[in-house]
Image 1 (spheres, rainbow over the protein chains, first blue to last red):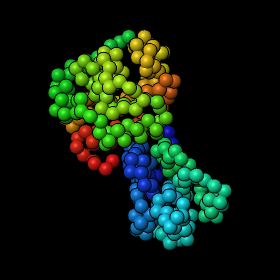
Image 2 (tube, each protein chain N blue to C red):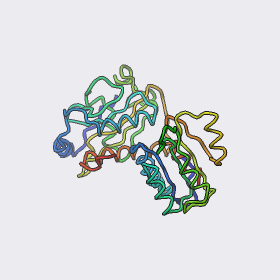
Image 3 (tube, one colour):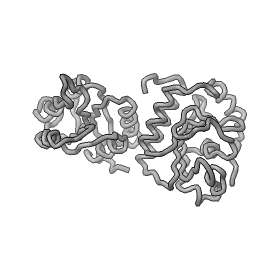
Image 4 (tube, rainbow over the protein chains, first blue to last red):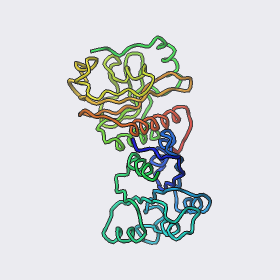
Length: 133
Length: 165
């Protein structure tokens, strides 16, 4: 079982798959880890980031990628740039299909704490959130 | 082998199951996707939405199993529905209740089994979300909680709830 955070915390999960999002948020609640706020789109995540302070986030980089880009760094840049209601230094994990050296360099420059590679499993996301506590 | 027990309230339980109008109906994506997700999440070869009828268990959704029903008396799910919580058999070969069960000694070689009872709206356990592996396994508290969440999502569907789970 992931080590339970000392205090239940608010966390953000940005992921397109509804069943994965829902399973993670329901299980986090049942384990007393805290509240996982779900966003299915980058737009929904931006709204949540403006309105609420989070103690950690797991973000799918494929979510909201457009114009031929494989990854969307907008949410990472908003948080790290201090343009959200959360501390700029909150722990962030990203979900990616295929990590490349260039991508990992981009993530290092944004102080990303963890990279989660497919297949995306609820247990891995829950363990990641637990580590944010 | 210990045959699956028949609960004292089985008549009422069966009436509740039949009132759901789910027995012998075609596969439905809303159930299939949750069972598929469970199989992938846990990395097991077999995952089932099993319902326990009077003399058989019948599978509303199934991954990794070709048959659509088996006898109730040899079913693990028949044991699971009388448990208050998730029923885990880490190695059926080491459990005297199951070691000589034909579905352990022969196909589909149930070695590891975990079943989360599915309650219909009035509280009767009508079946399970279950996972099967051909190797012994253990589940930690997080994995058991994930299975319970998936079971809860199936229960929402059974009660006509969430259409977008």
